Length: 381
Image (cartoon, rainbow, N blue to C red):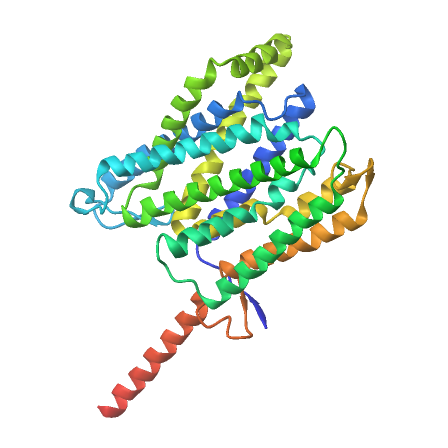
């Protein structure tokens, strides 16, 4: 009744998951060594990584195209060499404006993560990643109501279960969250709303990028390069505000020469990891869908949550681990990861007709029909 379906180019979402993990580990290391967590100073570094990765791969692709005279593939993406003959539905102004909005949304949600979310210290550490399913729901709504693309039975089934799990997660947070004078309900609701808004913005980023790739045939690497460029200039405009300057000055004032070298090395590594992460993000969005891209944000949540619970870093109440809190969210996270795989057809369910419109079954059905037609033609001859 359940079948695992290995999709083509699976290496790219797997690479994205690896880069997400490595960047997460590096930020934990920076926080452990230097007690620096979610500083606004990281925002322009993230955009530098985007710009560098996009520029490097775009120039390499151009050099690759010059050597290839026939149709070729680059990072499994089919290359169109005669771009001047392509009629783009949107004018250049709209295209570049959409890229600017992507960079702006990226800056807004990245800055909110770094500036506001850390203030809610009594929140569960995993709440942000557990609410990443909002990205999938946002992408699905964009797919249905903006792009006017069909949604099939197995995808509708997955979305319904996802929405139910999301509602339960929010309800359980109200039940298990410690509400007191220092963290009243108004602050808690604000924290939830802030997290959800950031996830919606992340979903819009993926959806707009997918629109540019599929409808305007825009180069994903060139898009990433422009996003990094626009985002860096937006960050640079705010770099001289007191908050940015205080962060940077306080960081470097507290270091001796040895720590300064190590910290600089870790920042360069952070730029590289951000570049790699965003490179595989746009490739995954291009080769699959925004919903497949968003799956990489919460696919490993059960593992992250189990580790945090084991080391007493999450699911605490009155300073002690709450087993009911952890088990409830662990089951929900496993179910959400499973539904994400069903939606993106990495797992196919063979009941209630949920398999009917999946890629593998449709391909097999088409091959069978071709074989039958071939046999009929031979009989007629």
